Image (cartoon, rainbow, N blue to C red):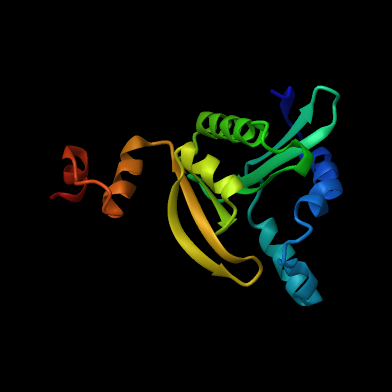
Length: 188
């Protein structure tokens, strides 16, 4: 198995690696950058609105092999007081299938649970099995589908740290019958 290390990086240091390698990972991606189609007024408004958000929690992970080569990343940010959006993750093509993505996912979830987040969610191209399958194995649940102008058809995955909340999702989906806790919650 390949030896690698996952590190938490500050935003600027992380961005250096992300910018250098994102085209390699997403070269055939047909998405577009929203900023490229917005007017100056719209960009100014977005900047102003962002200032209203304060400083939400952000996590930037980077993976390096034993020779200090950058091999992958995962980053995301806090959306509100309970929810973290796992925005973007990738492993460079030549380093895939060595457990790096799974290790970054495990570390991300451990950090976010320790921070106190209730839910982590992510959005993925509906055919991106290389990411969807490890997330399902890690306990994420398919929560919805989305048709997005930038990325096309997306699957939303939710991970709940609270087991009751996860069971409620199974109940809502028709996967399980309501147990005692769910019956109490819904006064059934």
